[in-house]
Image: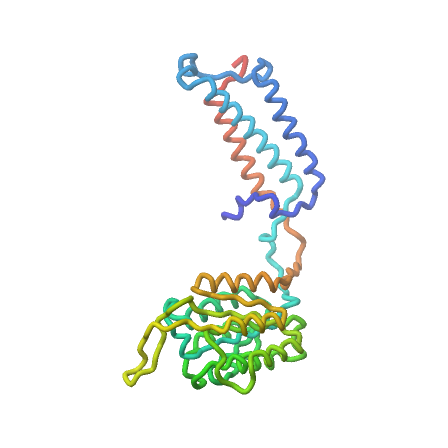
Length: 344
């Protein structure tokens, strides 16, 4: 029902646009009323007594007269737009969306024990999982995969357009699945192998880590060279606040938290991005992490959605006629209660 009152002009297509040339009459009408507003020929006088007019003030009556002119002008404008046969996309019942020119993306996420550090709420890993799922929801038509890494790496989900399954896999990630350490090079190298040569022309890896590469048979720079050879852009994200943060530490009594310095190899992450034509970002809280994913969304713009309409465009003049009727009635009541015509 609310859509019946939508008259935002630029949201409509006009199937008979030549009627819109009549809109030039509207400013001429307003100019004419302004020039002749005080003359007897206009036939509008205040309907109350002189005492009531003095109480209200002379300017108040003038403003009501302007309001009346404005209502007449809007009524005419809306009627002209209705004659131009407006159509709106919401009126299509028989269409389908087609996605084209999508992007292959692999998320390579660090799930080492340090990702449980509590400088994010509740910790870095949960915040990263939450924001990644939000990013996935905005990438309809893209094939997205998931690689997780600690001391080793594995493909948690091949590149797919079934984003519900992908998000399920993200939410299952936990530290301790792949041994101790942070193998950034292996995490990136595994992501590179997931983007096959026969995949879509535009291929992207988003590599997220909170530490320094300290294990693995391939260095991060070597993995970046592999990505460069396959023409894969890599966006790198260092996640973690600056200074000290409550970090998990193994003890005989389980995991305890101690304030420890945040160490992220920003130089290496920046170099990876430079080699592959991507960009490095630093996320110090969940808000900035969300902004980073939004920035990557903008950098990877693409037109993927086309609407295939199977029926003729429906004409929807009703919203314009409804509003024209409302303004016409308003004009009538203003004139009825505040003005009278000569000879009445």
